[in-house]
Length: 563
Image (cartoon, rainbow, N blue to C red; front, side, top):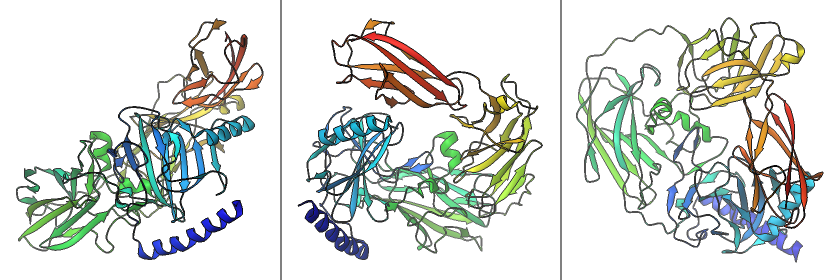
């Protein structure tokens, strides 16, 4: 039966996959609601997130955890992930019609699968896992409970993250195109219109705001007078559905004098391409001002596939000083529509301002140097031209062994990683070099990597801009317990709070009476839920914990408790 099931699944997958690919027509009502409560959206596919599009639906669980999560259709569990951030605990179900559904931020898998994962973790002595399965190992029926909802990984509150992917290409598809019964009669809401002088980069001088007025689903603005013959527009808008959350815009069109000049539609995105969101939005406004403004024109380094209508760039070249009609049309997946109409006129053309810095262009690799640092950008690093300003200044941190290297601004995005090399400001011993980390401060957070030495320079890769420096870190990571030494512990779990002065705890190992014990990583903390490895009444125990931080410093601690 196992061989027959695998054969039939393979044949059906191949046949239906070909049909789906040929027709590009998503099956309606094939997938069911993965919860037993009505589907309510906290986020939709394509919503703006930091450095990525939202790649599925966030389904509300009424602020509760441990609701039953159900297989959206028949198939088999093809993969699970257990990770600190990202999806947390996730399950992938592959279906015989060429699609795979993904369920994330789970608390627990169904019993048989949970036991398998737990056994694998103990065998590997590793909590984080990424396991693939064959079709006959864990088959599931439509509506079968496959997990319990939760709040694990990079989740800010209890919910279920749900995706539909093309099994063959692994592209994420917009689940709202599959016929789920989610009521929505609210059109997108427009709150701002912006124009950019495209003789320059969109980063400098930046957006010019235009007030918008609303009458029903029709929006207007005063005559837009511009002082450049080459401009583009952007829109600030959200979709609301019927549940009040700010959702992302699905479809936008820009017309001038009745002619379509730009259009985007968010039907499918691959995880390899999701960072290109930074070329679709005003990144500076998003990071600095928390404003989601979407360009209605191409940036020269934006290469997102299947996003905009081919051959329509959205760049407006004004050849006269006549008044032109502008219309922007926004739609959601249900067809609810909003329109913004305005008029555009070229005023007196202003002079172009010459740039004073080191211009880094998209589609061209470049190396920027300061006295003691070097920044290497690949040709695909930037979305638009940057008047790049890099300089150094003395650093007052007593553990710093370099100047602070200012890399332009954290409000300018980069695609992928660039290489940064920094020369220390004094000769370092081999022991000191071994404890050097590179710290990049980009305002809202810090990124710390262990330095790799290339000749006399410390080297690291980053994907944000900000202020960087070299630090010697000799501090030890540590964990602290919530119980008194040797105390009787009657709670359902052990919680250890992790701390490290610089960087992160990159390795954690716990042993109970000499044997590896499975702790889950929850943000900066570590949690063990009592089970058969340490039952009630088992007496006195010694917990040995070893942690390693980014710099490679190792600390071993022991804790005693009774159970």
